[in-house]
Length: 348
Image (cartoon, rainbow, N blue to C red; front, side):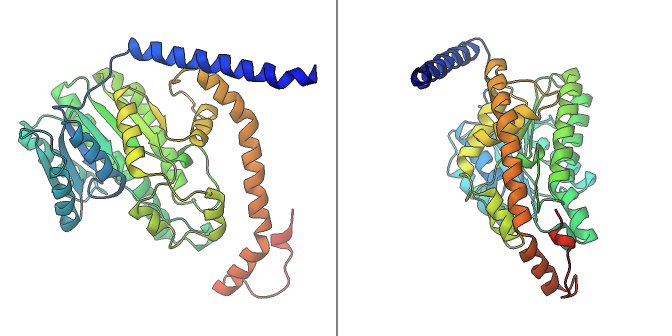
């Protein structure tokens, strides 16, 4: 009996795979897909990183694209890049320099971008602005904690609020709003005390608006992105503790691929978008009230997560536990504690 088990298991997996593929193809045939061609797409954080890649992707698809960021020089370079991907002379490509960390700045940016379109609210908004500064919680200042919420939550929430107000005023139907969260929108671990709470809040806002904006026939999505090869990632590494980078365990995903996944899944009307398999496991085990993608596949992923997530948690806890003495020496070097014998960090 035991010698037949691997073959039986392989047949089961193959059968499930065929079913999933067939189911997905069938769902794809009978579901309409949004097309950004000719639509006005508004991209915050569009001068660099994921935001620029999203803007490039939309430009290639024939959309009118407005990008917003603060640095005028970087914006000018980004707009020049977008022009190189223009597919029709009719496309409107524009950049706007505004701060997005206030309600006034976010509203001003949106209205400026809408002006060439007669003030009409954008057909789709991709909210890619934000940044992260990983570090030990003990090192963070009041400014670090406040900045974590500003850059992880408010720079997107203020823009979404401005869009929803304009959508309601104009009685616009069929819009799309896409937030950019993180894998730590579903979970977290050491080093992300100023970032993960903001991304959990952003996920909560997405789930709230997904339901509330049914009133306006507006789809709301959130990309829960893994680590990406971006300028922001390079900045993160300046403060990220070594053990935190080890737990992450990857060099980062290509931004153009992540951008394509975001645009494609927004077009399909998906609410929660996970780029990689690991994030999908956390999505299916922590999705709350968010809609499923494929109820059979999500059930399978949820079962895998039921086993896999505790294993991941055990391994992460083991690594942090093994880092205690090194961390204690770090605290001594920083002057946080005195170089005297201590058992507190070695306690189980």
